[in-house]
Length: 216
Image (tube, rainbow, N blue to C red; front, side, top):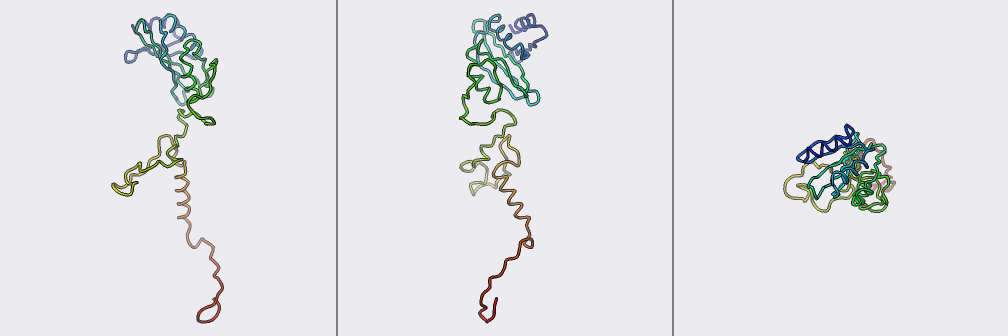
């Protein structure tokens, strides 16, 4: 069945799309300008009327890969459709006019990756609180929760005050080495240790009475 599906894509789109089998699943790479047409072809011509899910992958300088899984319940085949939008302007036509189930998936992908789905009926936040800034699943987003707010209890050997000696503390993935309250405190400690006693201004002695007489 996979070979027949690949032939169908080649007949319809020629060299504009690339269909490859991987682990028994046909993956079809589509340019963004053919995204809507490719989804319509998958639904109407290949019988993939069941929408499974949609999400994105941050490919850094390559942009964002938007992936969708669809199934044909009647014929028993499964397609992974994939396209890539540029990082500078991550826009893609919405799939909601073809697969209504993509509505919430596109909302989540929008808030987590910043991909804009043109034609979506309502790209309001789905999971994040009001006022949240940034897109948490982008690779440049700082994962700073355990740095900004101390984790309750011991999370490393030795932090509880007994047991094995502590390892060198590691920052959570995605957090720069010089980021957060702990890094600022360490910087202040280093600056304080660098000051020599002779560098500090001398204190003026208080004037008083010497027990043996005379001024001090």
